[in-house]
Length: 169
Ligand SMILES: [Cu+2]
Image (tube, rainbow, N blue to C red; front, side, top):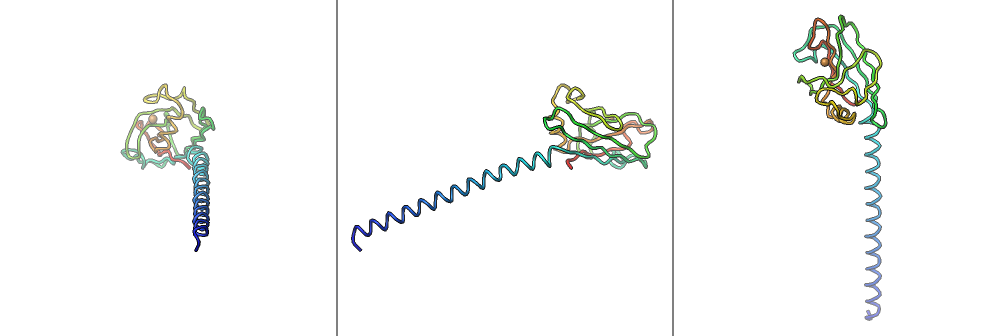
C-alpha cells in the first residue's frame, strides 16, 4: 500500500467513526428528552389530579366498632388554587364534624382542613393547624406522600368513627 493510499484509508475510517459517534449522541439526546416529557405527562395525569379515601371504623387508631362507611374524592385544580371534593357516608349516625388530618396510616395527627358533607371546595384560606397560612401545594404534597387522612367525628365517637388514608387514584 502506498503512503497516499494509507492516508486515505485512515481518513475514511476517522470520518466514519466521527459520524457514528455523532449519530449515537443524537439518538441518546432524543431518548433523554422523550423520557423527560413522558415523566411530566405521568405526573400531571396520574399523581397530581385525583385523590380518594375509603373510610371505615377499622382504620381509626384505636379502631372504632361501627357499621358506618364512607368515601371522599378530591380533584386538584390545574393551578393548585382550589380543590373540589365530595364526602359521602353510609349508616352513620349523629354526625359531628369531618376533617382532613395530617398523619400516616396507623398514626393520629392534627386537623388541617375542615370538610362538610357532600360537595365542597378547599382553598388556601381553609388550611388550619400546622398548615395555617401555607399554600394548597403544601397540602397536595402531604396527600401525595400519603401523610393525610379523612376523619369523620360523631357524638358517640368524638375522636373519629370512620377514617381513610388519602391516596392518589
Ligand atoms: Cu377531625
